[in-house]
Length: 114
Length: 113
Image 1 (cartoon, rainbow over the protein chains, first blue to last red):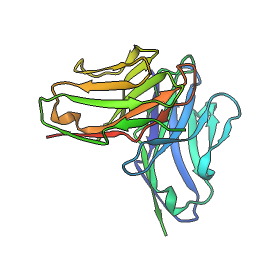
Image 2: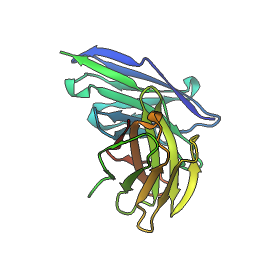
Image 3: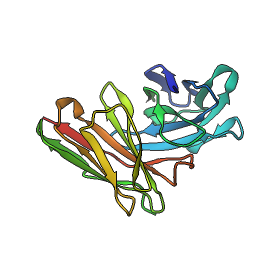
């Protein structure tokens, strides 16, 4: 069964600092991987996805993530945090054979201080 | 183009009652997914409908049910409500199960008192 582990339920950074949110997956075959962001009282918005093309994936709002098969990781980064980045971030995995459902990690709340 | 829309935004029910949540997918999308986001439990997959049929179901009791209509909109019904059913219910849609991207609605906040 697929699963996703997000290390750190809360991550605090200063505005302008590097953002690094960690995600490790467990799957028998390389899956599809996603990062979603959720602002308070909102639904989920797709930041980026990995579906087997380039291992370095660029998303919206300056975020990017790198798929590392050897480490079974898909960490999310952003060079310079902005106050508006404060939100909850979810890593998710789905099967490659058919998009039946997403399996989510427990989420990481990003706090950005001035 | 309109995104995934859910109604109502908020719903308050009494324990033992039934709740009905509605979802309209993005135009052209045939797959609809339901997720529950309960405090402390994270995002849990509930149901997947495609072309009017239930295709997959998460680990939830039978009192969680739903359907998909010919226009691909969907309804989630929760019978015999329990306090633990209080959660944000998110609906998502995709072009089909071979598509790799799902778009989420804003959710329905269900509170059971």
